[in-house]
Every structure is written in C-alpha cells, then in structure tokens.
Image 1 (cartoon, rainbow, N blue to C red):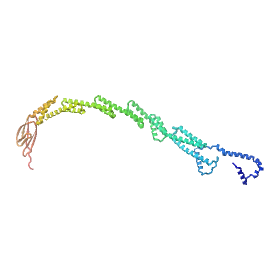
Image 2: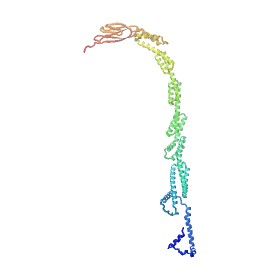
Image 3: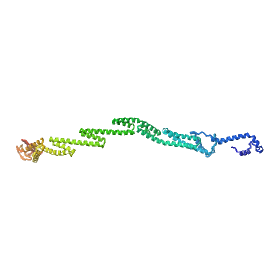
Image 4: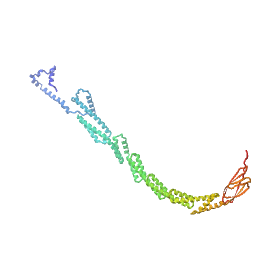
Length: 518
C-alpha cells in the first residue's frame, strides 16, 4: 500500500518526476482530478485486488499435503530455514511471504510429525511381521485409520490435532505389539490343549498363529510340528483303545509305543501307556495267583508257592500274595511233615531205625512243636543205637575176646530181649549175638611149627622157646608171633582166630642170615 506523503516528498526531490508542482495549487486542483479521473479509478481497483491477494487469499487457499517423500523434503527445508541464523525470509515464487515465527512453528510441527511417523512406520513393520491381520485386523485398521486421519489434518495445516491423531495411532500400535505377546501365549496354550483334547486341526491352527506371531520361536515351531502329526498319533491311540476293550493289553502297548515314537511329548499317550502297563501288571498278577491256587488244590505246594512268589514280584508288598505264600508254605510244611512221618513209620515197620530216625529228625526241623516228631525221634534214636551196637558186635565177633566188650555184649543182649514191639530183625540180631558170645568162649586149636633154632614168643601168652612143633588152644581173637635167632633177621607173624574155627597151623622160623662185616 503507497503512502501519499512519501509520494509528495519523492516528487519534490526527483528531477525526473513528470508531475509539476503547479498541478497541486489550489487553483488547479479540480482541473487535475477531472483530467485524471479514469486513472484514479483504475488505481483504486488495482489497490483492492492487491489487498485481497495479500490478506484474504492465503486464508482461503490451502497448499496440497505432501506425501512421505515430499514431507521429508519439507522437513529438511524447514530445518535449513531454522538453521539459517535468523536470515530474512525469502519471498515464495508461488505464495506470500512467511514470518520467522510461523516458519519455526511449521518446522517444529513437521519435525514432531516426522518423528512420530518414523515410530509409526517401525511399529507397523513389526506388526506386519507378526501378521497382525490374523489376530487383530479390526484394531489394526482402527489404528491405521487414526494415522490416516492425522495425514488429513496435517494437510489442512492443523498440526496440533494431526499430532494427536498420530500419537493415538502410535499408542494403538504399541498396544497391539503388547497384545501380540498375549495372543502368542494364548495360541501356544490353545495348541497344547487341542493336542490333549485330540483336536488335531485346532492344534495346527493355534500353532500356525503362534508361528505367525513369532516365526523364529523354537517352541512354537516344535508345537506346530507336533500338531501336524497328531492325526497319526490319534490313529494309534484309537487302535490301542480298541485293543484295551478286548483285554489285549500287549497289542495295545505296541500301538501306544508307536504313538510315542511319533510324539514323545504326548501326555495322553504317556498316561495311556501307564494305564496299560498297570493293566498288564494286574493281568499277570491275577494269572500267577490263579495258577498258584490251582496248584494248591492239586496239593502241589512247591509249585503253588513258586507262582505266589512270582505274583509278589509283580506287585511287591501285596498282602494277598504274601498271605498266599504263607498258606502254600504252611501246607508245604505240613505236607512235608506228614510225608516224613509216614516214611519214618514205614522205616520203623521195616526196622530200619537209622532211616526212621533221619525222617523223624527231618520232620522235627520243619516244625519242632509237633509231638509225634519228638516222640518218634526219642524212640527211633534208642532203637537205632541198639541196632547199631548189636550189628557191630555181630559183624566183629573178635571184639568179644575182650572181657569188657564181652560183658557189654551180654548187657546189650539183655536189652534186646526186653525191646517191644519186636520184629524179625531184632530177633535175628539177638540170636546172632548169642551165638557169637557162645563161640567167643570156645578155644581154637593152634599148631605152631618151627626149625628148633628160632626162639618163639606169642604176644598176650608168653615165650614159647625153640621147638619143631607146638600145640596150644587159644580164644578167638588176633595174635602176634615173633621169632628170633642169632645171626638171622627176626620174623613176625600175625594171625586171627575166628570163632568156630576147628584148627589152625602156623609156621614161624628165621631163615634170612644177617651179613657180617663188610
């Protein structure tokens, strides 16, 4: 807008000015307006247009909002403007002049918007990698719409509201990233539960979502791998269940083990394997117990006890098995006692007293409280001892030559005569011993022959001297003759006289000379 005072001053001082001072004299003023009326009207119209362009047009015309690249460039230009150390504003080629304050505010708004946009893009990239559309599509769209609304406000140069929209979108993106952790954990939990519930496809879906949120998570990848084989695992589990219904536990175990080969982490398969093993244990236990009772009924007590011990090994500490073992052992003991008693009685009837004593002693070792065994041991021990002594004297009648043994035999014979009940064996032994006693007193004729040069001595009798022949009578027994002669080696002869022998001839003489000198 032009100042009239300045115009007058310029006119007065400018020698090239076309205007003449005379035109402004009072006498000529009206003539001048009349002459320049048209120019003044045009000048006023141009002045109105100029004012409109300067003050009204910038408020009604909005510059187009820049895209991401142009926004970055604008921010850079603003920074350059801010760093120009207070240089005077430059007139835009297409717009009006901007004040430094407005430039600074615009630069600040652009810088803050750019910072938030950078964070928004980073969060958006993170959510895209997490495939947010699979688990929070609507929330993500809402946040994206808020970011787009910020763009609209920014284009309208409403920087405060624009920043608020950007900040809201950023907060929503950050909330979605936090939600991603919850979604991941939920997907992992859902996948694990689906496997437990044998919902193979649900497990695949859940773990697929988990791997979408965290593509590099090893646990999620392992879960997806498990989920993808669950159809095969379920097939084996169902086959095992069918076998269990038919009590075919070993076949069921084979299917369960195949299921665990496919999925070693299957809790359901592990639980079923435990149940099947328990069923097998119960089945084997029942079988062993049943076989044991069957042997009991057949009085095969050793076999019964063996089966009951097998059952106890299957189920250690089982009271039923322990009671059955005790029952079988008791019956086995009673059976053994009865068997030994029966054998002992049979041996007694046969007067085999040593064998009878051994059988009673065997029964007594099994149960010392049985009275029959105690009495049997006492009775058979006495008879066995008498039988042994009688038989020894009968088998060794020469012992009767000893007076002490002879007297003992007489007492033994008297004891045998008082034994009751009596059997043929003791009768025979009594007779044989009596005969041995009788013969033990009958002398035996002995003829000794020598060379009349040998000096003969008979131990237990005395010296017999030198003779050609010598006759004497001796009691049955063992004797020793010794012959000696000067210059000859001594000789020794031992002989036995059995009871009932009629006559015995013995030669005793020294025949071997002893070499003299060298």
